[in-house]
Length: 105
Image (tube, rainbow, N blue to C red; front, side, top):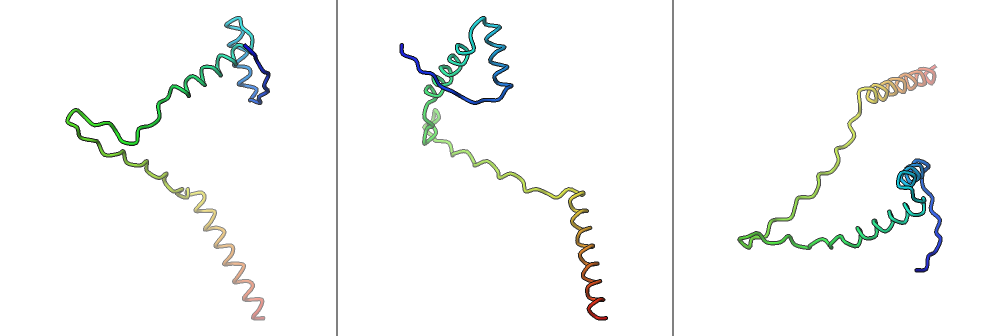
């Protein structure tokens, strides 16, 4: 079988885990990475295509499609954020008030 060399970039922690596995298995890093890639490709190829319609039940009825996932909740300002924003508004009002007083003089 012909082989080719490839280069990948990954995090140090991942390399450390691969090296630990290789040492425990008394194998090379190359062997562990090759086995992982082969398993990944086999698993990806084994997954069936998703069905467009759900299969009928024993009575021949087809279930309704699942409801879509709910949208994530909107960010609610924490009391700290609310306090900061209201404090800023107060400072802005004071600045405007001072500016009006100066312009009147």
